[in-house]
Image 1 (cartoon, rainbow, N blue to C red):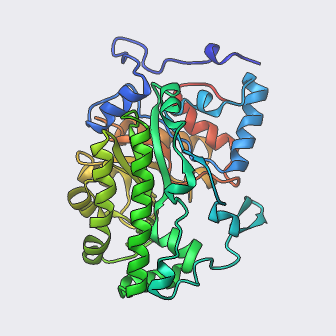
Image 2 (image 1 turned 120 degrees about the horizontal axis):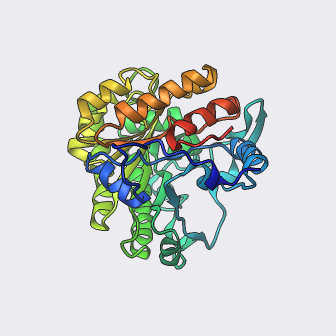
Length: 366
């Protein structure tokens, strides 16, 4: 067993050595498109991958603290659930070679067919179901890390109201046709999620650095909705979350899978988004270097490590090369948060996960 302190390798030795920053300082420079000491680090991991890494690091270093070993700069600070069940409890699970995952066994919001039904809808993040009283102290305890309120399930019309609610195809069609019941449901859902975020940010007393929301706007080949429709229907609603974050001194980060390039001008100019996560490099138009060239001075990218190809099917050297490209090229002059392009699953070889985080941290993790 080797102490962590003994294995940290300074990758910036020599006359050009960068002064180490704390996570909040690192994020501030990154968002300002100035060169930090290294990109902020994030790690999206399934439960099974977490367990595998914890076992490896416990044997190697005597710790199961993944945030410490991987030098993750972010800390998510949620409220406590005070009443009710998480609607995810309505989902089943399915064992697969890659792990155990949610598999929707019913459409729990299919009953919403009229305006009267909409009035009875209670959102997953209904603010009255949570106790926000512990947040301020949790923020203080997690200083100087990057403190995040929210998650990719906030807003989240296509997946939250769709895949986990009325059915994805049904929700997409209802939004596209602006069905009156669906629009009313979107409004009620949005107001509830906004109030949840407002209470959380207020409870944080100005200590949060990021408000995190989500909306899967792209598929593999293009946006789910046309740019014109997205600008009219989605942008004003998303802008309310961004404005809320900014009023509380926080940046707004939004998760979206898929081909987002055609929507980026809208997210930057109309929505005012600060950070786009997770930047899936295999999707059409999502070449990381082209995104950096064309938009890198106006928005910060989070992710970009290939899960469909490099991490899942490449060699450790392939993974090192891609990680180094993201750090040196995409991370040049800030504007980049290091991380995978979605949640790392169990079919990803352990040595590939270790390789990319060795490049990011300068540590020997094997």
